[in-house]
Length: 166
Length: 202
Image (tube, rainbow over all chains, first blue to last red; front, side, top):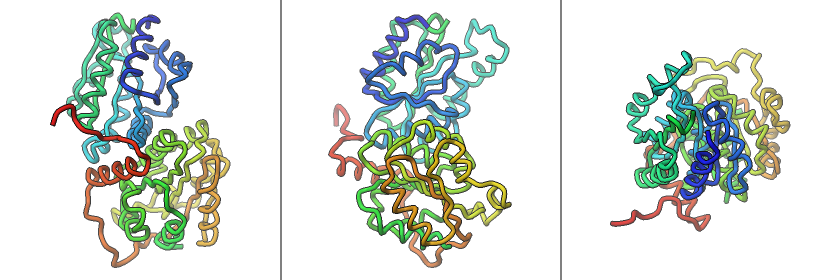
């Protein structure tokens, strides 16, 4: 990621009122994680799998603070169980920011399943999402994801792809 | 040791705390053992999510004591949270693991802790939570609750309890969604904050 894209993500998170970020690092967002760690207004929590991160974000919601789950899109599959339980069973929202592995241009065989499954999994869970490929749209997309999550009390997701992450 | 008796002892020590608890028969037991904590308790149905949610709540409200009432099945489902607690060292999180060595709510098939080899407290210590203990008597459990509720670092007590459920107790009627609203409104009122506020337009 370019520094300008990292800055746009952090601006979006701050405009949305996020103060806690749970993450499991990946390669496409490699530059984002240390920037989040270094930001004095954001507490980062490293998790052992993305499902655990989703549950921690759900707990943060209950505290009145705002959290984000940042991950590669493969983490969506690891999060399906807690997302289904919290979202459909209790109305506890989690906002996700994920890197889009397996999109057009992908050159790793192991990332192909991530691209094949991401949108169908989001659709199966009825999670509203956007895929952004232009840096100029990042900040507002993140703000909008929080607006909807806090109106619906349901999850939303922003996937970043294209030149943003390559 | 009966879980309901342990709950009664723990409930007597609680007033301002917030509680997240696991699925199964422990829900109705806690509903009856701690009637003064009903609005302050989030009754969840999520294997592997209870302690992570409690930790998230603890991270968001660092001045408030949070209690996680987890289970052996729930903890075994997501052992990674123990390593996260080991690294993050929350000062305000007390975790109880009701270890009845079985999946009680589906009739009692054994969990991994039933065979005398798997020790959740030892796993927790190995994950960086040194204050992790196993309680086998009511007196031991009560002592750990007293210490855990006052600790300035994460504290875990694994309560070895019988597989029996307290008979003839009142069932909780609300679902997960209603429980969430009750809990959130309690947090809002007790913290003086807004979590679920009004829409832009009515």
